[in-house]
Image: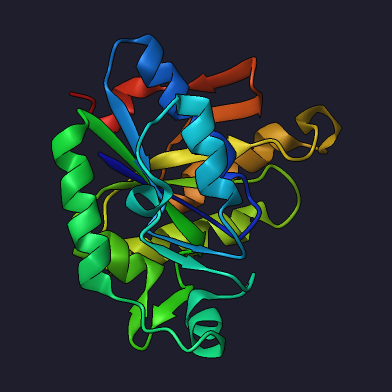
Length: 211
């Protein structure tokens, strides 16, 4: 099992989750997916559900769904909902029993609040998962990636590596190779994958503690 988080919202966690899931399916692994909290609709869950051909209901895969595209704590407050962490845990445990390998995707970055005194990073810790961090290739990513990795480690969470999702054409990013080296050197973390598109990607599966 693995938790897919990222340096920001819109960074490509859903896209990477789907690609990773399809790779594992092609290797004969019974892989499932879960997005514990989704704000602003059901699009992320629907996309991965479709890509992986899952038959689970949306509620099983996404136990907390909020209408407003805001931080979960704010969206829940506006909608007058109480986010039930135990409900998330129960859905997680059920999917764990059903699948050989489970991909759990976060909402936004690691410091996004779910509810009072409970961040995305706290959810990762609560579910006792290791994680990968999805990052981008362009200017600013060194800072964002190192801060994210450091925050997770201070929470006692194991970071298996970083996957660069090339939302910007990497060939047009000046000195991108030096950027990637800097992330590894100063963040003391390995870049285990680079995703350009659905047909052009590399992910080192040996780093993911597969069954």
